Amino acid sequence: MQPPEPISMPNILWISTEDISPDLGCYGDSYALTPAIDRLASEGVRFTNAFSTSPVCAPSRSAIITAMYPTAIGTHHMRSRAIPPPEVKCFPEYLRAAGYYCTNNSKTDYNFEPPLTAWDESNNTAHWRNRPDKSQPFFSVFNLTSTHESQIRLNEEAFANATRFLSPAERHDPAKAILPPYYPDTPIVRKDWARYYDLITRMDKQVEAILKELADDGLAENTVVFFWGDHGRGLPRAKRWLYDSGLRVPLLVRYPGKVAPGTVRDDLVSLMDLGPTVLSLTDIPTPKHMQGQAFLGKYQAKKPRTYIFGHRDRMDETYDLIRSVNDKRFKYIRNYQSGKPYAQFIGYAEEMPTLQEMRRLNKEESTAKGAGKIPNQLTPAQRLFFQPEKPTEELYDLQNDPHEINNLAGEKRFEGERKRLRGALEKWVKETKDLGFTPEQQLIDQWRPNGVSPVTAEPKVSVSETGTGYVITLTCPTEGASIAYTLEPIGKPDEKWQLYSAPLSVSNEELARAGKLLLRVKAVRIGYTDSDEIDVSLGIQK
Image (cartoon, rainbow, N blue to C red; front, side, top):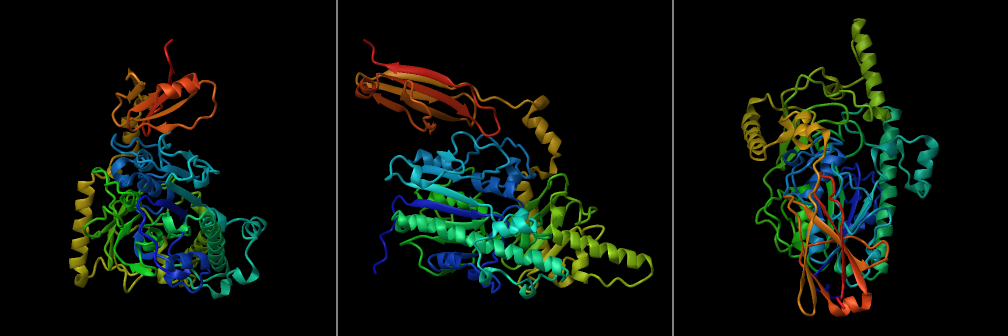
């Protein structure tokens, strides 16, 4: 069979999942059962050094949708309501302007409300199949939530229902789990670990169903498929932490006619690079303000990244300030608030049975120590999480210490690596104007003085006659605003908002057929209140 011709205007399909590390068969995990994802990996390229910018969903997803570091645009705290700089857009706007139909099903969670102009559809029924013109190229995103940390801790009945499509052979035996050394080996911990893998197998079936729909529609050969996770596994010392267990993610791309099946790439990739890569695949250059860089396509970066940077800031109700940098071999972590312990209380995270078990054993050790006994419930690696203070610096050899439990920051033989990575981190903090060092309330006051959100100015509508019809030009004085519009026969309901990217032409023939057209216009900017709607009636003068 001859390979398909390279795609000129490819469709793009993203399948994202939540709270998973590369705990998949295609990454060499013998405990995992992921046949659909493994097959996808065999048909394209598997990236072995892909990382999120943040080990928690909302900041991570803000980086993905904007191709900007959250620390540079103010979206670094968990569940914030940021107002990024005016040049920052949701990158699907560039695709919509180029003629793509863009759908998101359905999670956003960008640390700001997505503007009206970001998507053609963003809801739980959004699908490439909904595009009115079936020849129109599409960018479709499906966000699978089945592996989220909240699913691991469901009660027995709810978990059984969530995994009801798994056969007995597809369920993971807790006794066979291989636990990281920083977890105590108890039945409760093993149960959570096995449940996590059951949920991954459940998610694998969802991936299989989406890929089947693509194949059934005859679109598999002209669609580039991405599969990725938003950050690391949803368990203690993984999610919310800057270790590889919190930052390293799976990333697979199937690109028919361009990427050889079974390719493996070890270059450093940030999830922030996903947007520029999609633009590159559709022949759109990376906008100058973006900090992400393309790793495939026409505008692929000339050289891979040297470093990956990560951040942890406020997690729900708990503040911290941690930054990380890694290359392929070493990870450096800077704890700017080292006086705080690792094990600060975060209410949502405390619901996980594994963390409850770790706290129980730590309490038993404290009681034993107070009674003059030698603590023996936890190993030294497991006690690290309960230190009363964090070290200012951490350095790990990822090759020889993949679980990052042996801090080398104080060892003379690694002094060169520590200084090199610390220097790279300090340079990045300075060059990106890291907002993590600005108190959150100060940012909020800057964005919304007196608690009031700025309002996008009303758009201006200019209608010019051409002799054969009209040309409509739309503008907005608010810096960074995008403009949405609909143009429909008067009385026609539920027309979808379009992104304005160039003057609109309306011929006399169109007006004659419609009788009268209603132009509705609204201006939007990320973090701002939308403008009032402007309505203009168009009709042939008699």
